[in-house]
Amino acid sequence: MTTTLLADPSAAPASHRPTVRLLSPRGWVGVAVATLVLLVGVPVLNLLVPAGSALHLSDTHVGLVGKIMCYAICALAIDLIWGYTGILSLGHGLFFALGGYAMGMYLMRQIGTDGQYKSELPDFMVFLNWKELPWHWALSDSFIGQMLLVLLVPGVLAFVFGWFAFRSRIKGVYFSIITQALTYAAMLLFFRNETGFGGNNGFTDFKRILDIPIATPSTRMVLFMLTGATLIGFFLMARWLVTSKFGRVLQAIRDAESRVMFTGYDPLRYKLAIWVISAVMCGVAGALYVPQVGIINPSEMSPAASIEMAIWAAVGGRGTLIGPILGAFFVNGAKSGFTQAFPEFWLYFLGALFIGVTLFLPQGIVGLLRSLSERLGRRKGPGAGA
Image (cartoon, rainbow, N blue to C red; front, side, top):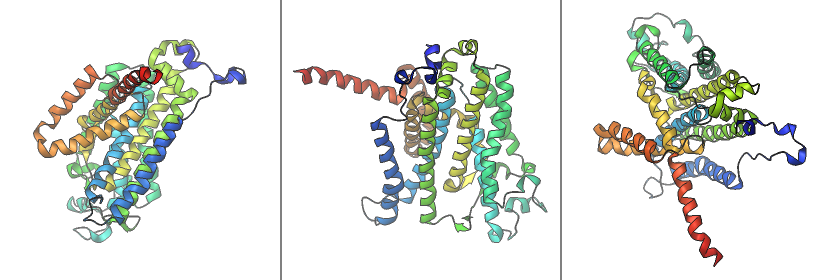
């Protein structure tokens, strides 16, 4: 099985090389439909359809879908390392929050003198009697500089952590516990006022982005469309990765890492590469999340936040790419409604959902849909033959 996964198509004669398609025709149709809905349908229903119409999509719903799309990017990142590489991370909330803080620093500088204290410094720094910006805010007034940090900070941290963890051959539950401990330690650090990240309140009360008012419907719609395009782009990138030779090696590592080593491949390089890619994806998701939600604080690094990411992937169906996206929408859509009706029971419901999926739907929503499709196909078979 591992030999088949690792077989190099270039070593075979041209007539016998397997044809690897990025997506099936139905898959491309699905991507096209999703693109039209997110980049054309939602803007039209929100901006052009009158508010009194039954077809109007409210700003609240646009904001909710935009937030869930950011979560879907995180679920997709988790699927790459867990579903395809067999590495369960319970600390990806850290990378999400770091990307969000990098964007939040820029948005705080965009407030300028419109804050409560009419100072160029963020309000929380004035309140703490700080006289100047700390060194790690040096690029905070530069959009390009902060966007580079959105990519570099999660990526570099993931590389350093992954290098030591994978070289030490830490696997399974031990790796999961260490990632969660790393995230929890970072959360405690960011709660401290002296770190310069707003303490337990974090960053909020944003005014502008690129000197454009952030609260206008048009700006929020641009952010929504950018998030949708990013989600679709990351999905296509992930699909390209898992259908390439790189992806076949990842799946072989997941199924039998020792055999991969015996065939001459170095699992460390492959695991480290996909680990860094998934961390950067979460950082980008966090950067898109903050201007749409309007706040970032250390709670995004809580252990529960990272565990929820794994639940989205499990509920949707890990190892499928589209499944974690569906799982993120299903779980967070349910959360939005459930917390309004029964807020105190949401965590119990989430735990029961995870247990139920693990016991009865190990392949998640995608597995259930495939099973139903196969059953319908078998029922239609005899009728079609008659």
